[in-house]
Length: 95
Image (cartoon, rainbow, N blue to C red; front, side):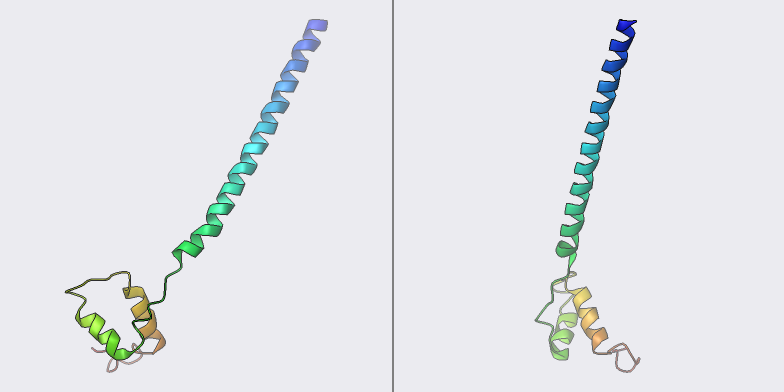
C-alpha cells in the first residue's frame, strides 16, 4: 500500500514539473512574439524620399525609370502624386 502512494506521489510531482515547464515555455513564446511584433512595424515603415519634392523632379524620375529602375521609390511617388491630387482628373494625370 505504501508503494502505491509513493508511485502516485512521483507521478504528481512529474506532472507538476511538466505543467510548470509548459507555462514557462508558453510565456517565453508569448514574449518572443510580442518582441517581434513591436519591431516589425518600425522596420516596415517606408522612408520618405526627399528627392521627390517637386512635380518636375517626379516627372524626371518617371521618364528615367526605364534606364534606372528604382521600384522601392515607386510607392512614395504614388503617395505624393495622390496627395497633390494628380490622379483627380484624367487631364491632370498625364493620360
